Image 1 (cartoon, rainbow, N blue to C red):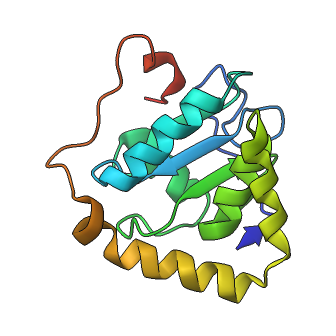
Image 2: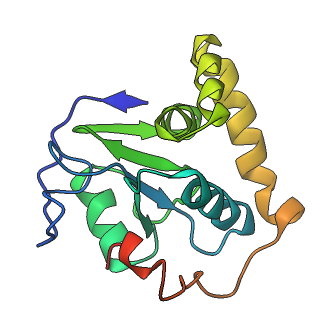
Length: 153
């Protein structure tokens, strides 16, 4: 889902309102999901321009951003991308994030031509099975000191 709602939350952040006009793209992810944590690490490795910021959906910052964007506060079944005042969910979020990365991974954005109901159907099937297939942590992943600046608090 792509909404045109303005993100008015600034979280008292120097980022100029994560996901809003002038702010960097922000990825909200399920902090206890091994697949989701792997996806975040995948993005970090390919974010050569250092544009992405991250927050687990369970964190205070994540909860504030979910609330500010009228998204469920306790249903962590969607990867969320806040970018240029828009909220992208599920497959659209993943494809737009891929487009913003460096290298050949950005070619994945070509899958945007696949009808959304098909893309999101596959996405939802993976999301429903992610804990069974990839496991789950007891606590949210804590970034290293080197990566801490990429995460909203």
